[in-house]
Amino acid sequence: MTVAEKLVLPEEPSLEKKMRERDFNRFLLNLGIGLLVLGTLVAAGFSFTPYAPNAADFLNRLSPPSAEHWFGTDQLGRDVATRILYGGVWSIGLAFLITSIGAVVGTIVGLAAGHFGRAADTTLMRVTDSFFAFPELIAAVTIAGVLGPSTTNMVMALILVGWMRFARLVRGLSVDLAHRDFVTQARLNGLPSWLILSRHILPNVGPSLLVLWTNSWSRTILSISGLSFLGFGVQPPNAEWGAMLLDGKAYMQTAPHLMIFPGLAILVTVLSINLTGDRLRDLIGGEALSD
Amino acid sequence: MTDHWGRLKQIFASSGRRLVGLLAVLFGVSLITFTMTFFAPGDKAAAIAHARYPDANGFPPEILEGIREEFSLNEPFFVQFFEWLMRFVQGDFGNSFASNTPVWDVFLANITETLTLTATSLTIGLIAAFCLSAISVWRPGSLADRCAVALASIGAAMPNYWLGLLLILLFAAHLGWLPAYGTGTPAHIVLPALTLSFWITASQTRLMRAFFLEAKSAPYVETLRLRGVSEAEIFWRHILRHAAIPALTMIGLDVAALLEGTIIVELTFARGGIGSLLAGAVLSRDYPLILFLVMFFALVYVFINTLIEILQDFLDPRTSLFAFKDADIRKGARS
Image (cartoon, rainbow over all chains, first blue to last red; front, side, top):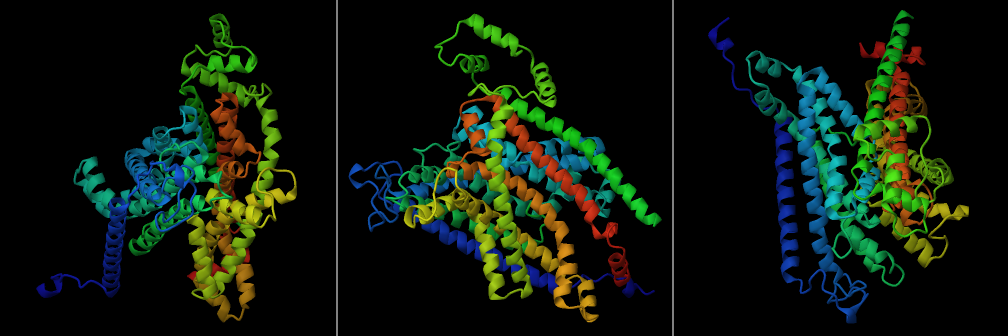
């Protein structure tokens, strides 16, 4: 064997890998452009709308869509388009917060279950299973309702019912990873647990986590608006999409625009996040199934 | 044959282990449920007193104290929890505060409507999803396939109460074909069932399509095709059975989601049923009813999922309990 043969040349990345990278970069570019356009539109909306979300105008009640009021006005004469704009902050922002907290809690539980031995695994997973046994909305309605319907209580309820998916995913992946060579080697080299977890396990769990997080985000938007629609979430004077639908329900016959536009806003938002998430999953091959 | 028995034993052993885990989860479930109501704000003794003497205004402290004594409300958390759990296990669910009748009777009076609604929606949804996904995988990438995928995406993003409102707007308010609210005639169930089943159709079409495609691309399908087995037979006898197992799991999850969907749909359409019963109980702080209903939802969910996991073990073609021949063929094809 000659020296030249032993020499390991840096491997040329395979065609497949190059293509995947190109697709991924293109996706990031599209996502960036999309977000930029959306951000500009929303910012323009906020700065150009002449109305305040809760400013009543009793002379202009329940008026249909027009040039002044693009999506019409509601029973108190408030501009629906403006309210939808402000409502997005509630729906999308709260869902973002809830999902992120859930992801952090779930990841910690999942990592602990996957890494600290059988006893920890069994205990933590039984706890997770117990929480998982409650249908999300049922638990959220009960918690939010018993504590008293308010935005804070709804957020708490949704955090309580939202972290288990992350725990299950992270636990499953880290159990798989724990037997991989690089983790065994790290352990044999005496690396402390937190370093193994943060340097070796977490980066490998990351992509799947991101996919699940996206999926969870859109589900949470649906839950928030659903709870608000049932009266257990954001309370009516506030312009949340579900709360707006609850408001508009009574005027369904005379002013159908009151329930068309907030619903469309939810549909379009959730659909866009879902489609982005699907694309993301295709590209990075996350193992997050839809459950 | 020995291999066969070994596998069977394995299944029973894993089922046994699952049952032990199930008990632990059930305990956890009841602990969480009880905690939810235990730490709720408000005086429970006053709520019970109100239920007993609906006409009275304000109660002397002795009566409240007597009620606290009777319902052990002064005891520590775990004593109360175990007392409640013992009674629950023995089938004593207490009386509803609101109507002062046994919780069980209130439940029985409402469960039929929910069951009718869920069963109808599940049937419609599954049939529609099966047809859509079968059409969809027949020619992947065709116009029909694209439409089915688009429908599934929209369905997953559609808030189901909004769909309900739109259906009411169209069929009840504008066309006047169907009643919007309440229950009574068979026509009353059409709109709620459509609302719920649309969601089932969307989620199941997406999953079934994926499972069908996966089963279709398996190497043994090509083998069968080369042997001259007809496309129809390949689909009905082979692809369907392979896709059935993963689909079954997802139906289990859907049943759970369906139960939680009832709460929204029953409230949107002002129907009776345990979903609207729970919402009412929560708002009036009817604790015995809340405890029972939340436990009911959780137990149904847990049992369905455990049942499905066990069923999966039995139905898995690799267990070869029902399909010696097929399994042998596949083993040969793979090696």
